[in-house]
Length: 240
Image: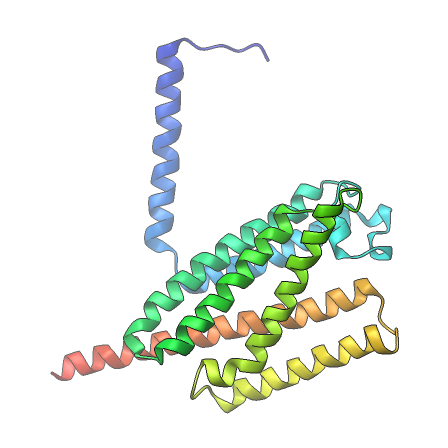
């Protein structure tokens, strides 16, 4: 407290910190891989949400919904909101990398662009969920938070239902898992809306976990396809 620096000392300290930050960023950029991005994305989502849940356990957040963790009534709501914002940025970077790397595979252009568009919209909606808190005292925030959250759900349903067309030739094993997860999400929706067995919080946790698992599974599948295509290309070059 009370520390002060002269203009030359402050400039020198600023430059030193800039050099350190830039060096770290360059090292990260050179060594980061898409697999690492997927791992960081998983850790960010589960870690951020779990910390928010634990820090708000005394407020009995589960009596409301998950979005309560990001409202002005929650403890350290910035943790929950920042989780969605940072996860969305990671997803955008991952989607951009994946679909640039997919180009040499010569996939159908229309389906590939639609798949990229849907995944990008999913990331944008996730960012909006973090940026716009579900504060019921402010009607427009509550409205747009719900719109973005339900848009994410609709996006995932379209992806799961349309993956056969969006990625022609996708493995049967992937389709079986997709169908299973889709059926479980529909079943959970019936339990929530139809027979009122699930509370809103339980439904959100169950459906979100299934949807997020499927998205991660899709990213892993696309990475395998890219790595396989790259390996085949290298083999062909060596043979020539």
